[in-house]
Image (cartoon, rainbow, N blue to C red):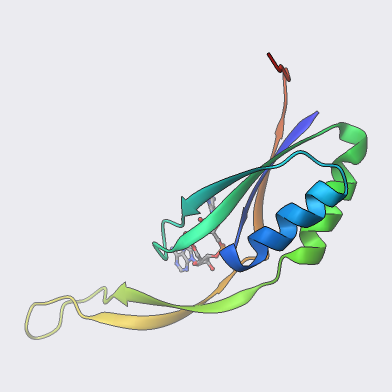
Length: 109
Ligand code: 2BA
């Protein structure tokens, strides 16, 4: 068994949960915040048997889209005033950031 930890954009999360549930996968949805953008994203925990792993990954790949987001970043060099000036930068976020973890035990009490 494996645990898929998938960090996805909020815009994709509802459709992804529905799609996974419709295919018979168990899903837990967590509201999370990205460290770089400091913006909300969604982390899904999906426990899957090994023979269903590829199917779950295919669903995630199909639903999650990459998008450009504008973030505000402090300038690395202080200006003449000595103040760090925030400036907008464009970053490409997602599809999905995925960690796959082997599951030693799966217990339901
Ligand atoms: P954030 O940390 O808010 O990052 C959002 C996007 O900003 C990233 O998209 C990436 O395109 C960009 N970015 C991140 N750190 C950067 C940096 N130091 N300089 C320039 N650009 C940077 P993704 O790579 O698709 O990541 C989406 C979200 O996935 C992240 O949101 C974070 O919540 C999570 N994530 C990504 N890599 C991770 C890791 N190694 N461990 C834990 N969480 C991770």
